[in-house]
Image (cartoon, rainbow, N blue to C red; front, side, top):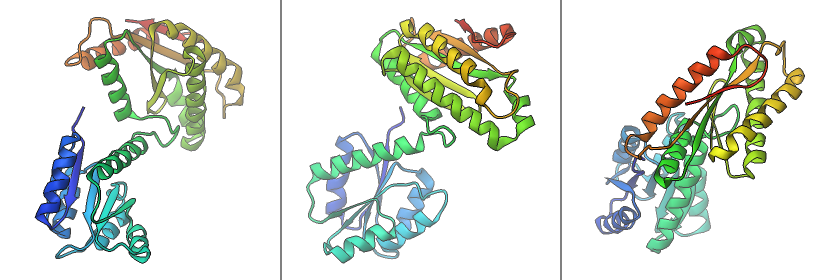
Length: 291
């Protein structure tokens, strides 16, 4: 997993050093900016998980840094924890209205700061990692889930689900309506995973009509059977002519895989399984192939 990066914009060397030490010990890679202009450059160069931003800085102050970042479509998602010696309600309101996501007054407790930083990073990553069509975890979250499964060493199955004939279906009904179909499928797969696993399975949306489930091997067949039943029973409610559509799934297991090389090998196994499943896909029901 990539180390989480934080830009610390603080012109006071002593405070910057304390914050750097506290967050470094918590597992963050800290990048120091001594003024607002340098903070803007570091954020744009490194796309950090969080900006710790002092209000009173030379060249460009913290309020202006926050305004510029939140006004930029690329950097508006960067969470900002604002630090200031100005503790009045009006000062806090000004910081929050400028774009800060959280606010701490100096002096502050380093343990509280570390906890707030972790909470902000977790929340921001959850939002970044969601697919906007289905609101399910996206590609980065899927990678992290697979990495966690490999790290745990527990037997795990990855299931890649797709819809055959989706491209021609999408062309016939348009992008907006085909996204409704994908959104519905995501909801059905999530419910199927919950039913099969008792709530412990992971469903992510790779993109398009491609989804990936990570669950215990014994839950694979119940999951696919439930998903198949849902898709068949609700197909008539989908926009356009959904009769040519059917689900295919490739299944790969983590048996014998290690953390260092396991993700690539699991991807190879899934690719092979999906190729076999799509080649066999002739009917309107789940066709799945296990590696």
